[in-house]
Image (cartoon, rainbow, N blue to C red; front, side, top):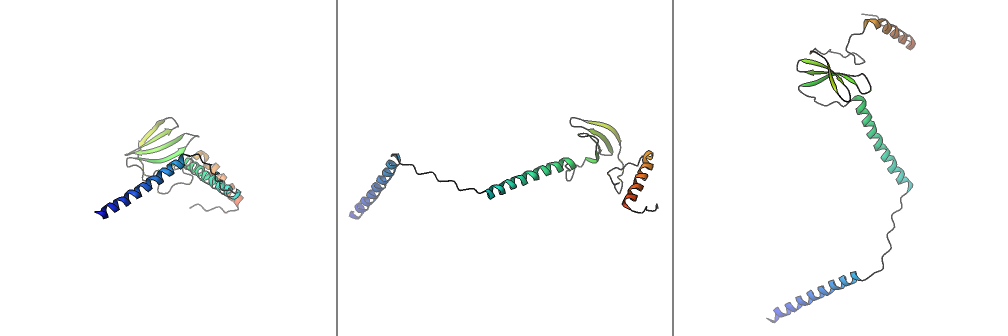
Length: 168
């Protein structure tokens, strides 16, 4: 039994010592102390500021470039819809465009503005030409301007010093 009493006294003594140490720390924290001087912020050099500034402007430039490209070329959805497909689209003003949409076996010619969409014409779906015409237009050239286009092409060839191609 004396062994048990001895261990009990040791445990009581260590608990009392821990309690005294904790009380001393709490009392010390409550006493007014001299504040330590604030740590100085690390010096920032001009080169690191320039590097951060150039990085920020590069990121902003990329954001504006992507926004311009998306607005200029339009965002095309990958995959598209199964029932509705945009066949062609042409800008006719700053915020206006004419869009040909295929719905089933029908083509709808739509006038699209910033605030509304109007159906301009409806016609049966047609086969798309195998090769697109340069310039994005699939319509036949207007015969009234055929001479002017030929004259312009001739003057362009002359100014570039190219020979005229023979017609097949």
